[in-house]
Image (cartoon, rainbow, N blue to C red; front, side, top):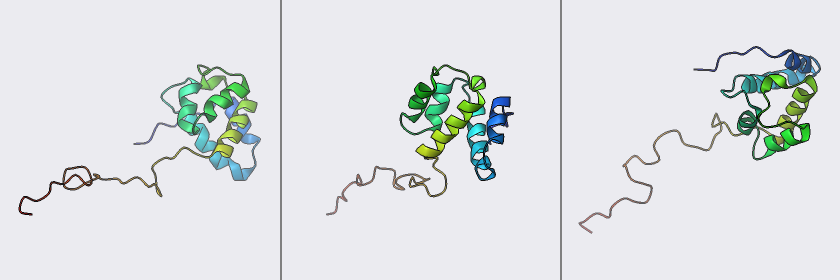
Length: 121
């Protein structure tokens, strides 16, 4: 089940309009992820969207507190956040191309390499 679609704020719309057409789809992805996050405080939202401490560094560079609400971002801040998101790369999502296996790690019920030695040997 996907998250509900939340309308963009006027500032996010203004930032989107300032971008070239080739970057609009990426901006929409970021805006959707930020606006539909369960928390409206920027700290936890950016921790989920930017790898490592990039979210905290961006908040500090923008002069914002981690408790600042997503709706309080201005158009320039949306553009700055988008540039930071583009520069740092995305957080691994576990989607296609992921290295993590989807099933059980072992079909025999024990940790890998922890099988009992047969008694007859």
